[in-house]
Length: 207
Image (cartoon, rainbow, N blue to C red; front, side, top):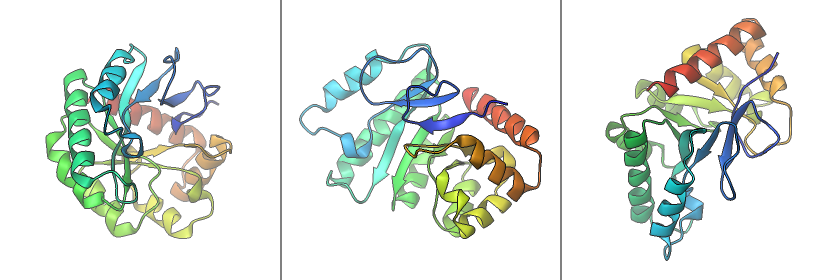
């Protein structure tokens, strides 16, 4: 059985969404966006031009994009760049893969401007944040931390199956381990979990 890796940085993984940050787009699903940490204050327009020029038919999503309280880029500029990417996603009808560090309620406030689904990648925060995101129709993508973080396992237990994705991000481990762990937590078969995640992909692809 093949397992879909919702967000990764490895070109050898074809069954997933590769995060394109440079180079030529691959011939399998990828996402493209301007990460808060990569905003170049002197070349923002060139960054957007590059982003648009690299959006081929295999582009599945816009991202990573979002807000990060730990990077040095001014918050207002981060918000402007994020909003422009939301508008691009609306225009090209693609979901958004969100990077968020300590700015969840600000990201939630941008949700009303998005016409396409928003997925928080690498979610590993507290239950209240998870509940507030789910209430606002976000999807949550979980990574390696689920294998050992008990509070995160508890959050997965109460997260609806139709709002979940699983990813390796830039961690070096087999995504199958994550699927096995989540199927145990949700008390369903691997086949059921796999099928549900493929259904979720279909849902976000079609807005």
